[in-house]
Image 1 (tube, rainbow, N blue to C red):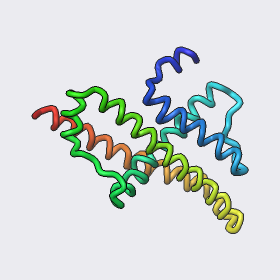
Image 2 (image 1 turned 90 degrees about the vertical axis):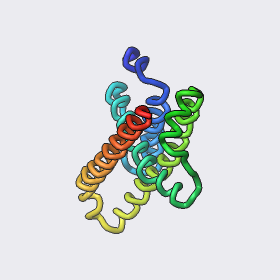
Image 3 (image 1 turned 90 degrees about the horizontal axis):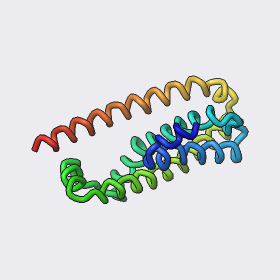
Image 4 (image 1 turned 60 degrees about the horizontal axis):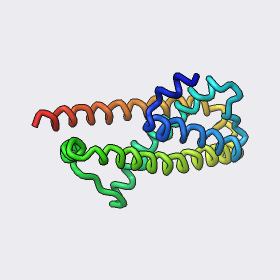
Length: 162
């Protein structure tokens, strides 16, 4: 287990594992759902996955909303690629930036779970639909993430051609 944890980059720890652990802890303490794992190995994989989901919520929901309302503005991706080559500190700053976005998404995700549980108290069929809601939601989330990542790769290839 230690070897596995040693191989995780700081990006993976702060943008996946850390928010996944926090998500599990918050959901366990605020709802009747029990996500915290007793088994460390299963826990690490589950928390990493939960953190990945939270990170995707940040990338696909939080970030576009903040951009739409002009709370944040991004430089063109080609400029980011060129500037990152000249100034390695930009990558570190971008990693921290992504962590802050993921923490915002963590709060949104925990609130969504709490609200879902509260709504299910008034409409019990929501709880029986939960597995299907999760499967459909995760499928859509990762499908959109795949498209976004493919776009980034394509843009990075184009930026490096110039």
